[in-house]
Length: 100
Image 1 (cartoon, rainbow, N blue to C red):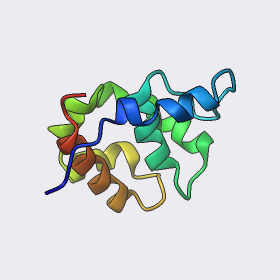
Image 2 (spheres, rainbow, N blue to C red):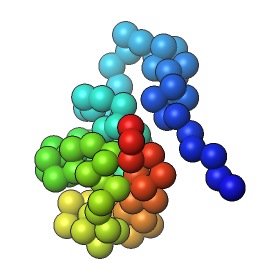
Image 3 (cartoon, rainbow, N blue to C red):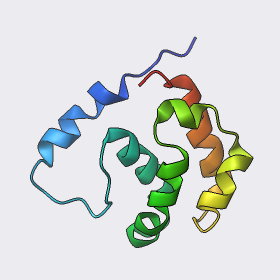
C-alpha cells in the first residue's frame, strides 16, 4: 500500500533553507511550485513561467487537477519537453493528494 505524502509538510525544510532567495519559477503557493518543478525538468524556467498562468487558471488547485485527464492537460503544456509523461505524473500526483 502506498502511503500519502503530506507535501505541504514535506517541502517545508526546503522552503526554510531557501527563504529569502528568489526562485526563478514564478509561483504563488506550494501547489504551483510542485507543478512547476515537475514541468521544468529538462525544460527552461522561462518557458514554464510563460505557460503557468493559463495552466493555473484552468487547474487552480490540487482538487481541480485531480479531476483532469492527462489529455486535458496537453493544450496547456504541449510546449513543455516530455509533456505526455509529465501530464500523467501530474494527474496521478493530484489524485493521490487532492485534499491539499
